[in-house]
Image (tube, rainbow, N blue to C red; front, side, top):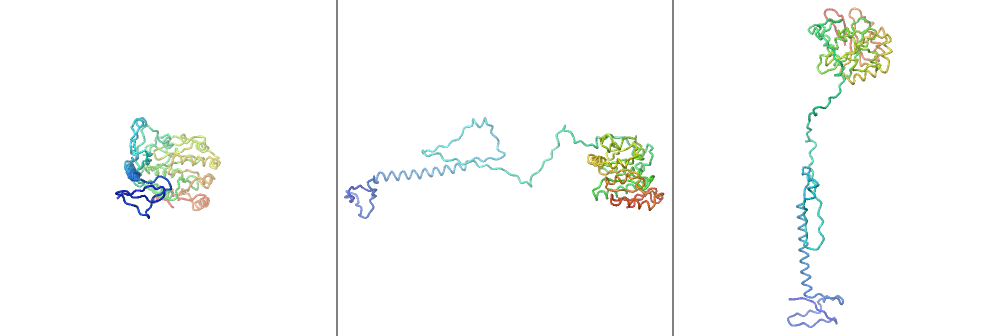
Length: 370
């Protein structure tokens, strides 16, 4: 059955022709108020265009789906194309069969591979050959030949030449106890003194330094701070060298004053006695030079050989620069009253690390009393 509308100028329904069905009076007539009305040919054209529009929409949807599937994925490991090659590479274009504008191409999706921070492995590489090593003032000190075996005569006996003697074992015990105390408090500077002259301060300082030098991968400094009667050089049997007063005043650089006896021991000698020793030790420049010396050399332990406590004010002037005091007692001459006076002078200024009994009886030589 065919359906179409006919025009009627008077608004009445037209007479049906042969083979056609008359429209009822109640059916719509598609009246548009005098405009062109739908004909059978126009209706077929309308349906054909509707089918083409749906077909174009399906094609456009398929093209968009294909573009999304074929979108390039860029990764960090993708090879880089040089600009010259990219300029000559042909570009792929998509043409639409209709006159509609080209669809907007979606932006490419970039995927980056992120590593797990916990799974990161740092590769340690050796430094390139030919680079200069870090400057170490300790290695720049002049090295002085020293006889650790005691084959050359010296003013004082050195326990390094008598490793099996009870005195050597006593100094090793003193070394171990001293290192434990210093490590527990984070200290480095030790002053070695006695109540009166002749108590064995230099003898104890030198042999304790030799015992500390036997500790592998350590650095020990021995400083002769007894300006009134310096004796470190003669006790070690090395040529006299150095001016301690000029060094503490900053007039002599570290590399010209200190000397290395081994890889673990360096000494600062003094061959110029000074009567105004306390004035030198009170100077602020002395404190700055000592702090800079310890920092540059990276010394683990620094021993200061000082004059007697009860005879001069040198030790009292130098106490702010030390972490602790090691008191040497003469077993033949030092009295209990002198030890008590020394403890009273040290109280509130520097802790007393221990009392070393020198020239003890035959049964217990070089006894250490903490």
